Image (cartoon, rainbow, N blue to C red; front, side, top):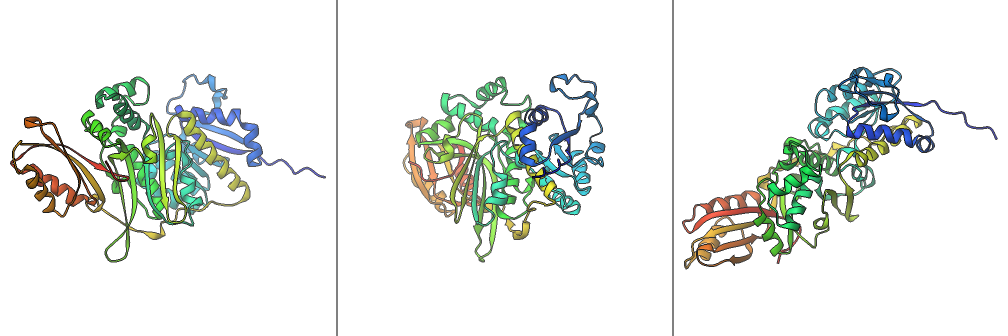
Length: 441
């Protein structure tokens, strides 16, 4: 029997050699034989684009001649077949990838910010060049969620996606829950352990999770959703008292990304996409996701409830997802095929946060006198918001009312809070937090 002739190596351009880029290089070198067997041809590093030349990267075992500061030139070089982008940011990464895709180079990217802001431009460039665009690593690192949404669940109707998709904030909130620490104390600990950046704004203010929510919603609902469409709140205002109150109700506080499909009054459909801290019952599968782990909970008509869990950040987990995508695009390249592109055919209306359906947990510092509860209840009734539970904490001047509502629009709930602030018997609205995922004690 004659042996099949060996296929030529597929040449890979790697844009970026930071924490993730270095791990990608390491996996390509240490797993080269396995990757060749899985793909049917060897992968060969054509070049590695770096910001600064001359740095000692000898520990990678790479020929120094492969390093270049000309990322664009490397991405469009004629002999390059596949491009891996792990630089991040909008520009110049967008220009590099658009030109590479138009030139027929398949792209694997971990760039959540670019995909959330302008994924449409990349998809259009991929269509022009007949190339693949894969981005599993852009959301939740090693957790396989992009491909299941894009391919495995393509025959189903997804109704809701709820996720914990930022490890830094999940670590902070988990520590606040476990130890009773305040936000600043838990953030300091996260920074010391390397879970939080020196400037944690993108994480703690919800920008990172918002970008990921946009990507998940786009795939789940076949509608182009950008980061600008996502309502966003961070966790900087979450207090130890909020976390303690959640514990008293058998719940925990998590920063959630929530993407939902809705049926409108006219029979049409719309989607809402939001990121904010919320109280979640401890019976919900996401409530047990602790430390810096991530998880995505998907609900679909036929498949029911699915949960994807694992390490959502870090060099090695992210590189694992990158190399997994690289295997897929390499196989397609050899077969002369292209994967299923985006399918934004549904083009559903995107709701504002005011239209989103949720519930509120409200703590009120109230005067200790007769008739307080009836006045508070009247404020809720005036905006058609019904009360699920109410309890009083403390007595006399220290009395606090804790109220959990039934589901209503966010606009009606926000208007109710404004009305409460105007009541003479309410000295202070101590805290307001949304609640999700089931009933509370």
